[in-house]
Every structure is written in C-alpha cells, then in structure tokens.
Length: 112
Image 1 (cartoon, helix red, strand yellow):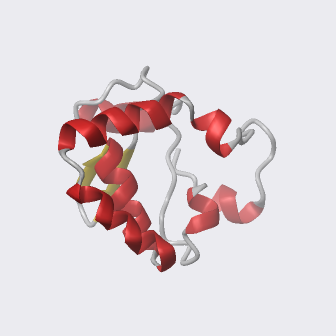
Image 2: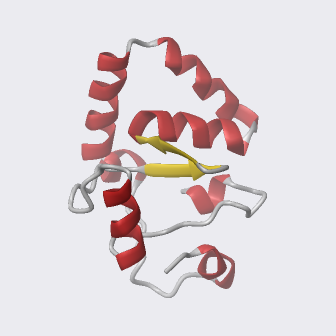
C-alpha cells in the first residue's frame, strides 16, 4: 500500500520478516512476531501503530492529510481502532503477495 500511496518514491519499505525489520521493531520496543506492529521512521523520529499510519498519510499528501483529524480521537479509542484494523487488514484492504516477484520500482524501495 505504501508503494502505491507514496508517489514521491522516497519512502523505503522494510518487511518485518527480514533481520533488519525485526531488529528495527525490537529497537523501538515492538514485537517482531506481532503482525499488527507497524513502524514509520521519518527524519529520525519513530512513529508506531496508529500514529505511524497518520504520519505516513500526512507525508503522502493529498487526501491523506485529512488523517491528522483522527488525532483528536482519544488515544485509548485510537489504539482500539488500530488493533481492529490491524487484525482485519486483509479483509479490509486485500492481501498483497510479497512472495511474488515485485516490480522493479518496488524492489528498489525494499531495505534488506
């Protein structure tokens, strides 16, 4: 999804299944074995879970900037919402097959 939304191509993607991805999650206090964990590092600042989604959306611009409005929702409600979305992400957003050979533009974005 990031590959499609970030039209600048500047955001790099690091799958959590890689040693680097797992190390980054552990470094920022997240569990690499938890598939709902999400980390977005921008300009040296780490954003986790719901805040990561909002920060990424704002960075991508366009309609994504409206995601900042979700920050007015109290943190416990945001955390609850994030967990529900994370657990049901495939049903909501569809499943991407990273095992398939990705296109060259996507391949260049991957950190390993």
